[in-house]
Image (cartoon, rainbow, N blue to C red; front, top):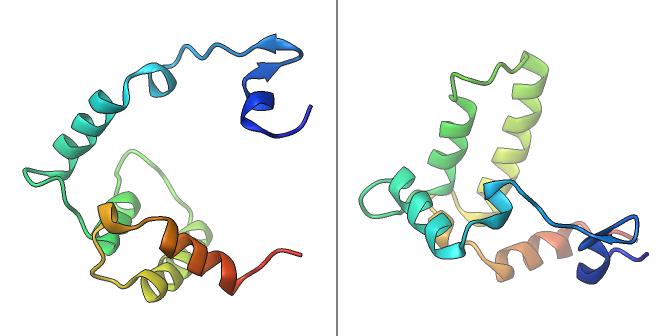
Length: 104
């Protein structure tokens, strides 16, 4: 079966029915929770989000992993702009990224 949205909704020919709340909760409740996690305004800049991710004390990362993440973060910061709000990142920015490194 092809990797289309219709194909992804099936597993071994049977309908895929996710049970995890990440896949079943409504978009409105997920958006509300995300905004609650980001603060009163629901806004956060890209670099701050990356820093929060790297500083998460519940995840252990080895130095080589941290170095690899930093390389990607710096490249994305250059492309997007270090002070770009996460909620402003959209299709245009990802199209720009895709066009920089086309897969052939």
